[in-house]
Image 1 (tube, rainbow, N blue to C red):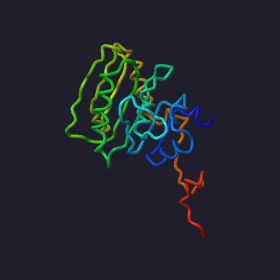
Image 2: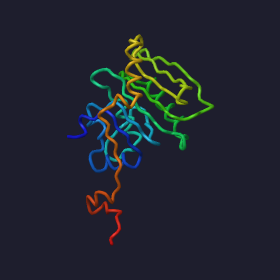
Image 3: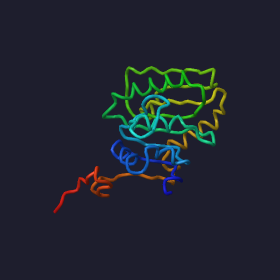
Image 4: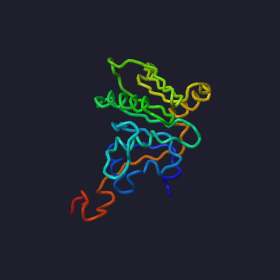
Length: 198
């Protein structure tokens, strides 16, 4: 399948909903090579959540984020939140709670492009999974960065992975979804097309 080899998605809330409805509720986990998602106003929700049929987009995104890659590299989620930032604080709180209660390890980097004057950086450790969770503000790009990874990790290697993940030029397998119901027509009697008859 075309999606299987994709390493980088750009997606917004509406198009993610359509991907899950028309392809598969767990479409993200079907993409074995997917390492970076660049989202617009789409945040993970509910910690290590569920992506089954009927669950929210935020929970599906969180399920992908908390599913480890086979190669040990961190997954990367970039969120554009400049005009709709009220859900971000809750997202960070839920990710922190999921980390504290975790019994298995996973590595990820979450970058949120937004300014929050009330946010405080932190460093938290989970002794059960031997991991560290950090939150810091990257002033150069005016973004908040949350990183989850092993305690005692190879910091030089991690820095390379994180830097590669943040730079679009290193992602040749880019797949950007932008489609409307009118572009594909009705897929079932319960899902009428929004296109207008002439």
